[in-house]
Amino acid sequence: MPDSGIVLVVDDEAEVRQVIVRMLQGVGLDVVDAANGQDALALMEGGLRPSAIVLDLWMPIMDGWEFLSRAKPVAPVIVLSGLGQDVHPLPRCVVKLLMKPVGLDELVEAIRKVAPPQAGSSRH
Image (cartoon, rainbow, N blue to C red; front, side):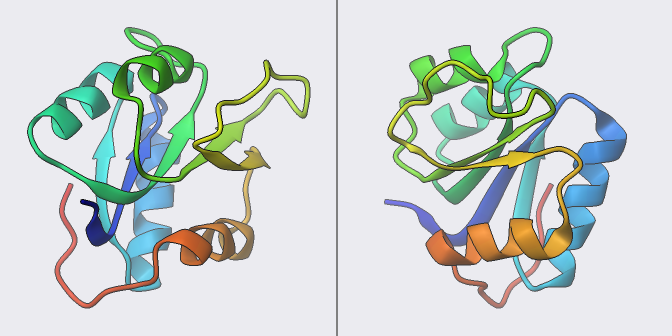
């Protein structure tokens, strides 16, 4: 069962990840972040059940595609891509494809549709 309100942000670019984390924390979301799919998978195998996952597809170590196939996430996934609409067919768990750079309003709207904000401290 998902931990209500927790958003898992997975992106290999530290600056991008930190900006997204701060943006989401600023609107009341509890955020956990990971630098690649392997780290995100380890968090989920350790018991993290996010309400939503914000996922970059192109990362070293374990990319978003492998993460999606191995994690079989039960949480809705919002994919961030710099490649435009020309990506492989996306799995059903992907509820939204957003282009980088993504705007705060667009990202928050997509997350709030699947993971409403909760009171609590942020973790990362």
